Length: 556
RNA sequence: GUCCCAGUAGCUCAGCAGGAUAGAGCAACAGCCUCCUAAGCUGUGGGUCGCAGGUUCGAAUCCUGUCUGGGACGCCA
Image 1 (cartoon, rainbow, N blue to C red):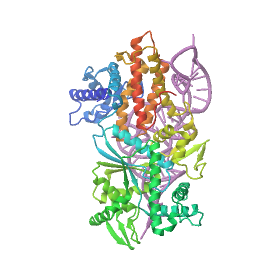
Image 2: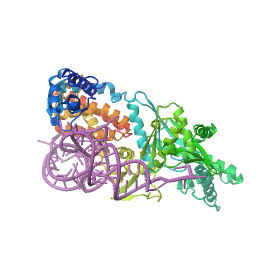
Image 3: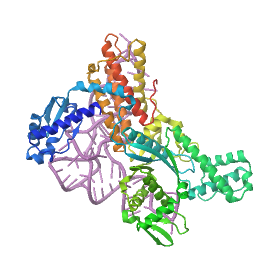
Image 4: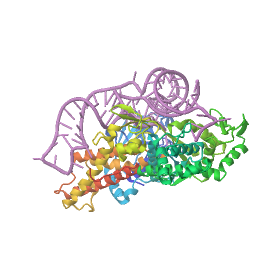
């Protein structure tokens, strides 16, 4: 347990025991003690609304209750140096600051383990994200989903969840047939022959490149095969290369997966037909109009959904149901899917399927990442300048850089539409939050370098209780918040809390830097105490940036 | 028509398991480098939290309705 957590815990216990001693409520009636950090420093370090919550139980005015409570509070045990009653009955606590400085030692002892917690309690959670079809390159929306999913996974891991990252490969549907047909057409075209692209074929440059590679490697060898054999070859070739490229692009984006799950494997194990049978046994399947239907309306969906089409093939939904059943059966306590906004209409039927199979819909949490719009010179950019098509993830990274791309995607809530300001992301100045945070880190590194050059022993045993200046206390409190911020971000699945937190921490650092001189050779004790504080801040900035996949440079 | 997301300062957004005077960045304005990186700091101004009801001691936060913007509503994937 971290220092701040301990202080809060003790305070909560003392508040409860004061309520009991004052006879304001019994143990059974006791409301949860809510401690909050007031925005206004005049309202202390912590405040509780206990008196208001007790108003109905004790049948007294909140202010009167507050007075009784305070009278019975053991301030020494609670390490409180001052208690005020304010407003409608808030009780404000001023904490004895000396205990706060311990956070520095805790951080330096724990290193990058600082901030971990047991909030997740080892719960096994699988996060499936990106899962783009292997029929082309990754685009803007994928980049957002990848950044979000990866950061969420990192944050939840740190908060004590047991996380697996999975990419679902749609390598079985008719979009893959279409891919093979598209490559086929481009192949003949590359050989100088006439061949029409299939209707709804993949028009992208990436397919043309693939076909050119095929010609370079194999010349016209494939023209001598039966068409069906050739298409099978192209299907495998296309899948392999496009998937490889996706994997590489993601790795360059600092996103890796624990497992890549193939849709085809579901068919190989007969799991798709199995899933339909299971639904049928439970009575949620019927035949109509020559097709097989899933009665998803029994579980709140708008309309029933087709599982097997008139032509005998499956819809997209059917293998997906089998896939989710398989995921559940792999023993995860919870599944999280990260989907793009264009799939949100799909949520109800997936939840319906899970319930029809006998599971709670709570086992599947679907996070939707909303649309991304690029802005440049104040105007909306939709198309790539080079290709005229949608902007790819790779182009975006090349244009604004990896750190800025990841930071910008993660700093916003996933369910808000995102206006991505290219000019701002490229700016190397204080307007750009990425640089602001990275600069704080570089600044600390610079101070440490100089301290060493001037002969300060930066690893000395120090008396951290010297850290009592206003800006120092602000930093200590912020550092102490970190484990709770990570735990909150994990529990609420809001990784955007991390960029916000680290921005605030950077702000506290810059503010401190301008107010106090760290290296003062005439006051070695204070210098060393401050150096130690700087090291602790550096650990936390590094760690927070690592969670969101952004580098912490030592020099800028 | 149905469903999902959003509507908070000039702009981009936090805050939403109810709590005190609603926050941040940018933009605007006024200051700060003989001193550890000015890629920084300090201060000022700026808000009917889309609108209307309701629940509550208390609502940006919960409920209902409504308006606006975006998206989704295939025997496509």
